Image (cartoon, rainbow, N blue to C red; front, side, top):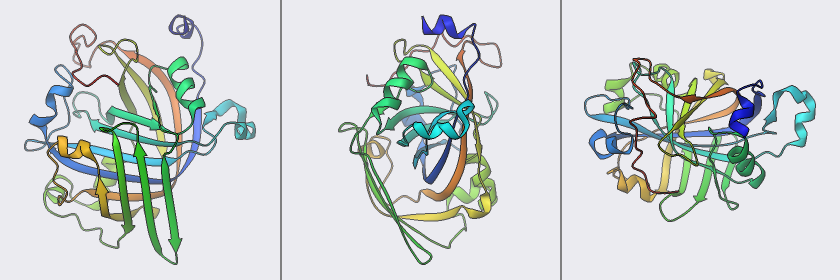
Length: 274
């Protein structure tokens, strides 16, 4: 009924001022994850590698843009997105979600009932703590949706903006890397009741790149990384965004790719049931 009604009603834009956003990204052998998103979906790829990211942040009054200052009636959830990136020639600046975790039941239920682009899982014990002392950052996050989608990580800031190893082969500069990761415009996600179908959320992210700070991981435990063949000693690309404006501009079903290939008729997602 909601899908039918939304065909004839305007999308109610959502907004949040997010703080303490942490991005952690790893290069993954694409052959180990390609089957999770079969053709015609194509992941971003460079020399046999693709990128997997985990990010977490603190929304501030995530709710309806039209309410203006009254948006303060909405809670401020913590959220974590686990995602891959689509090939640029498929749809530029687009990610596809592996998982979404939120710590407020209102947003979990609201997302599932009112949207196909926000099938979040619930973790009431989601921790995301940031300690600031002088110019130093100490970050601790803990997420436990189940034994597979769980994470505990400690990070601290660093002054090193020099890209190393394979990252330097992919991005010419630190700024190029930020331009790839931050200003995404679309997200794809499985419909909660029809996982063979995809929904697209259209988003806008505004941030001051000059205030983004590089991070390094002190300690991490994440079983999914092991499943993806990522060694604990690998070098992730991590950074911290103190403030950003987040907007959800619209939502629509993914019915075909830019090249005209039908998605819903041929995609069969091969992920574990959530």
